[in-house]
Image 1: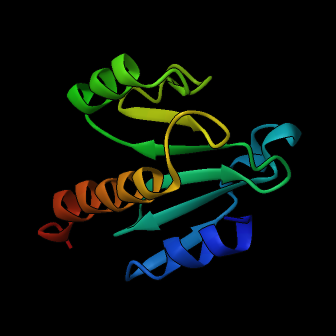
Image 2: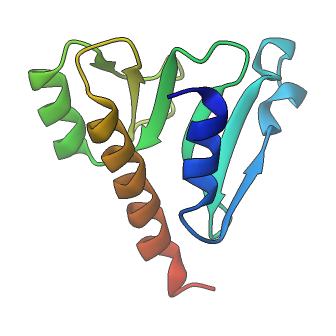
Length: 116
């Protein structure tokens, strides 16, 4: 899957918006594209370096994925406690990556839908 296909997939999930909000913090983050549902982040990628996807998750799911897959880790930013970073060239299939994106979307959407 290429970056445009991945972007279209994320946008197809419904009521998804995209922004590149981190460039104002540091120039090296200008290329980070973030996908939002209900105004909250659920997935992010670097459009200049499409080697990883970072998705919202739960502590249990992160622990499970890390125990099973060498290519799953924590994001570089330690404040992203409930996020996992997945190496796209690793041992997680595209089918599972896309399922994790859908799961991340659902986690965020269900948490904030009642608060609109």
